[in-house]
Image 1 (cartoon, helix red, strand yellow):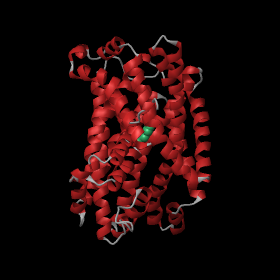
Image 2 (image 1 turned 45 degrees about the horizontal axis):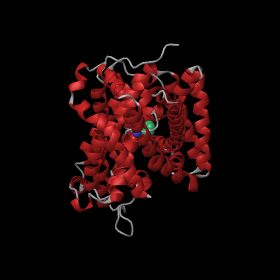
Image 3 (image 1 turned 120 degrees about the vertical axis):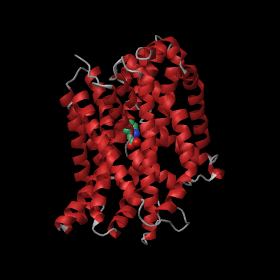
Image 4 (image 1 turned 90 degrees about the vertical axis):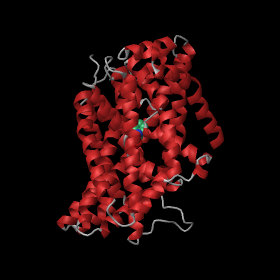
Length: 446
Ligand code: PHE
């Protein structure tokens, strides 16, 4: 069977940046900034994203393109030693499980976003009951929209690489950037926006070595670049050998980090604008209120204050969030689907529906046990599983794989790779710096 491939470098960059840019950027990053001392977090995050996450991203992309396979198949291919082959398989499978769990909570949040995007329309049409249902936490709404979002994800993935992922990412990513910039331009004209901007851009240097802040920034960087779960590995495996993989990876990192930064320009000032309008944004201890309250209470309260512009801004805002979530959720579903299609020789269409269906079931289990399960699965997957698996990917790229094989792969679309700055630094980096940093952070956290 012929393997799918992205048609162009731009297509790859849009798809991989689409995978990376998601709730982690437009929701996770601004929230973390808000609860971790503003500008200090921004600074540490930027450093870690380029110095730690980019090398780890390159490890996945290069292994993927070289093996032209999913992570479960690719990691064992890097070595002849039987034990290391088994180890590689285990890491790949752990990635599959993690990705399925991430998608199952991701779909719940994305479902809320879609419900909030539809709400202004029902409000405009005068369907007040419907609007209330859409914006109030309830079992029926959560079930309905988790389901709806999963179906959208499954439909795109069932259409394949260039027809599904690439085509839809190329449509959704530019739309996302346009909406984001339009919203920022509007928000910055509102009162108190500049106070928020200052909080965002002015680092409090005393916070920079705060280990809690560094651990949060590391987890955020791994989540945001979709690392450790074989997602970037599989996207790398669809990249043509003629392309310069070092540059393509740098573009993806730049877009991901750039969009997180820009999303912060929207969200942090919005909080301060909301506070100007009398919406409560600080808790009793004076800390900024956190995640779900931010997006689903503070911002809607702000939109309500905006008069007739409110529903339009709300619609655009939640549409933006939903698009970002969808380009990421397709990458999450692609990981297990690609594995089953390749390793078990199954048809993509039916596999997408079966695996997507199973993950929907998992989502529903979380919805029905929301109180104790939701936060738990988020913490386990993003705080522990992803960085830990990212560590193993670096170890396989740096210690298990022959250095020369990695070089040959990079050279395919980048002849002069051997003399490049990248090659002087990267092998040493994935071998020592990335694993050591992750291990130290883990020991510290425990
Ligand atoms: N990077 C995505 C985001 O920022 C989430 C994600 C994690 C996607 C892991 C794929 C794999 O929202």
